[in-house]
Amino acid sequence: MVQSLVHVCLAGISAGMFIWLVASGLTLIFGVLRVLNFAHGSFYMLGAYLCYTFLRFAGVDFWLGVLLGPLVVCVVGYFMERFLLRHVYPLELPYQLLLTFAMVLIFDELVKMIWGAGSIGSPTVPGLSGSVSIAGRDFPVYNLFIIAVGPLVALGLWAMLEKMWWGRIIRAAASDREMAAAIGVKVPALYTGVFVFGAWLSALGGALAVPYVGLLTTGMGEAIIIEAFVVVVIGGLGSLKGAFLGALVIGLLTSFGTRFIPTLDMFLTFILMAAVLLWRPQGFFAES
Amino acid sequence: MLVVDKINTYYGISHVLQDVSLQVQAGRAIALLGRNGAGKTTTLRSIMGLTPPRAGSIRFLDDEIRGLPPYDIARMGVSYMPDDLRIFPDLTCRENLEIARRVCKRSGYWTRERVESLFPVLKARRSQKGSSLSGGEKKMLSLGRALMTNPKLVILDEPSEGLAPIVVRTLRETINEIRSHGLTILLADQNLKFCKQVCDYGYILEKGTVVHEGTMEAIWANDDIVKRYLAV
Image 1 (cartoon, each protein chain N blue to C red):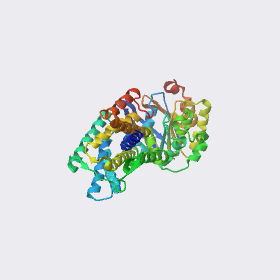
Image 2: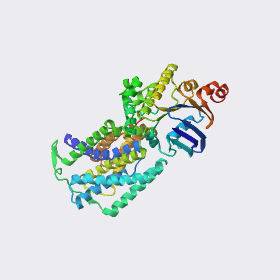
Image 3: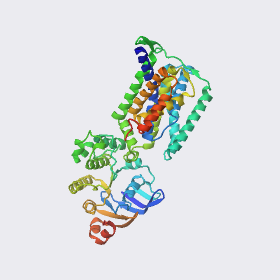
Image 4: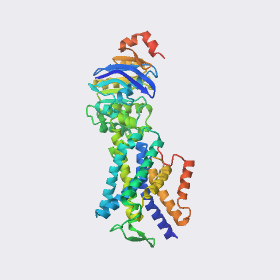
């Protein structure tokens, strides 16, 4: 029983770390640009497909794929912010959601055109493909690696936002974009930078998910964006701390749900979201 | 230094400023006077590029700045203390000062040390979050932050508002000290006495137009004008 609980926990934490990588970019972009990017899961999907393509067709090493795939997604994110999103900032939220939702459909169709509609089997990572024995049962080394990556990214983000001037400028612009502009912050360039960085975080999650998910499908972007939305609702929009803890909670809840009450599956997640919305609509760590 | 020529500014469809013109010569301190809602803040925001005028011209050091984004105007050497101070709430007191210097990249007389010696309380509060400062401290911080960009022209919106008389006297000395380092000042304030002690020349606004201008002594001495446009 204990053995099983430990493994359900570890599985939940590693699943949660992928949600965290997507949710961190989503919440950072919302905090600064005030845009809810529905297409943020598409960056995850593109990160995965591009990483896979670099491995499969350019024959590069997995780690080089993890580096290159998200970089290509950064270029996609740059064009999306610069030429599409920028024009809807002055409009109301529904227009932004419509535009980014349209982008989800466009990215899905593009992926189907390039890689085909079927699922793609993903490779394993040399060096990290084995398992270790934890509490008397085997656990994949790669999933342990993912459990380490999540907090490292969180630490990096914290250091950037709290300890570096770049991050302090982002925080200043997030709290008061007009005053930031009045002291000389080039707000449009900052927005592009934050959007591209958020896209990179999501794509990094996708690239790292290649050996984890087993199969790449066009639905993977939608699946993770829904979970990421639930996470930011629970954690509070714009809060990175909330996104990290929310991702852990959702990862664990899903893991325990599928293990002990498999019929409920995603139902538990949405029940939790509904409860949070009713009881504490601003989430647990929202900025005031 | 600054020539504002017949600017017209709108909020949505309401026509707030109508053909406002004014001039600020280098080294002087100019006051915008007028009651609440006369258009003082809108004039200052128009110059800073925060609510760009739809018509007219604003020239700063012979460059047309109307239509430029605020960050370009700031980098050209105009800085701004808004009436609601707008301290960055989750940066510390010292970060609020430093950020202006780092972003604007203009060097000159004003350094963090000099600003902190001008306002010693900012040094004492250096690691406190902006949101935790008192109203008076926020005012000093907002003014200090405006100096940190080493501007040529500093725009102050309601500097004396909400300050106790003794603090207003200190502020007067501070502004005179700032002027002695070569800064040009454009301020809007309701306190006529304060404006007379700090500024050389004044413009009186009423319903979005300039209705009177003159030296501060002349305005101060003109009971008719004071009663008509300034008395509450």
